[in-house]
Amino acid sequence: MMNRVVLVGRLTKDPELRYTPAGVAVATFTLAVNRTFTNQQGEREADFINCVVWRKPAENVANFLRKGSLAGVDGRVQTRNYEGQDGKRVYVTEVVAESVQFLEPKNANNGGGNGYQANAGGGYGGGYNQGAPSSNGGYGQNQNQQQTPSQGFQQNNDPFASDGKPIDISDDDLPF
Image 1 (cartoon, helix red, strand yellow):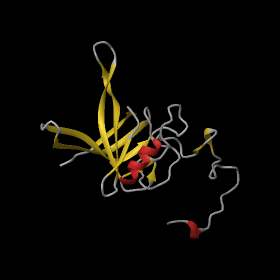
Image 2 (cartoon, rainbow, N blue to C red):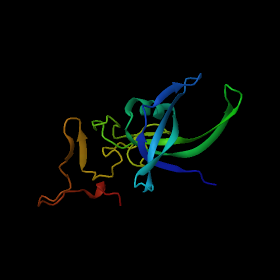
Image 3 (cartoon, rainbow, N blue to C red):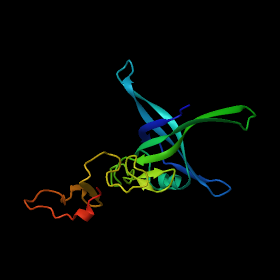
Image 4 (cartoon, rainbow, N blue to C red):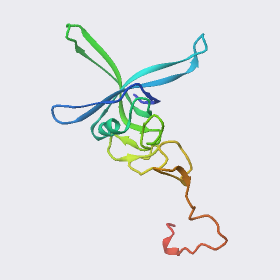
């Protein structure tokens, strides 16, 4: 069996952070995901997908994402039901996020994301490298780029660029 969901979209409102009676953080948000085709009027429609994330990643989502933030969600579909206040059975389908990627720099115009990913396993990571620091925020840019708060993205000096001199590496430093 397989139950896997990967979504990229924008938050329709600020995430809502709550805590269970046991003190476990849970954040809920809705992601607007554009469809790949247009309707008869030539307009692109979107699906609005409810998402849930737990524990530390939930706190990170609530702290760093806002309405309009571009986010990537990797998780699974879950259905549940409960009895509503009117006594009728209510059915809910949602995506339980195992990781949420913040896909825009912190200083983006709409105020979203910080260039890191909130993993259900804890820690941060860029792309799908869970637990590894990242400066590319999921964009897939060249690793030579880094973000500084006031300057956006800029090129770093490549320590392995050829400057005409031989590179002095000891045989003891080689992994093979």
